[in-house]
Length: 128
Image 1 (cartoon, rainbow, N blue to C red):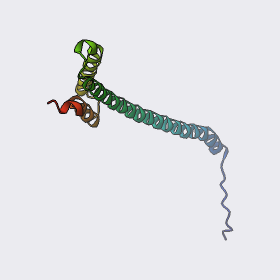
Image 2: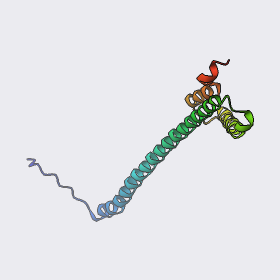
Image 3: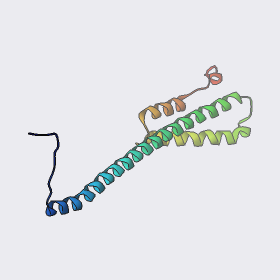
Image 4: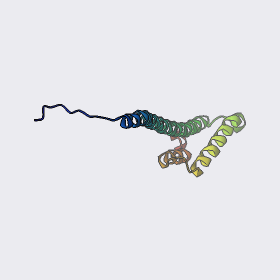
């Protein structure tokens, strides 16, 4: 009658195979785990970089709006004294227009950029 014990009897040949195969299986499992961890790290870094890039583009569009606000608030100042500010606005505008062409910029970020380029400050709306 069965007493609840299960005994495996291995011959010398079976023991040799187990001793040779077991470390290979253990290493394979370990390498698979490590590769999976590395892939997870790469995916996380990609997501973080993508989010940071989108935030940077959004900040650049806000910067452009701020430059427009400053320019509009200085409407009584002669153009000759605002040359540097106008150069910053021109450079910012060109930079944002280039980002609209680039494929790697997300559509939601392009919406922010378009809104920034079309932005007219409140103080200047009264003039138009």
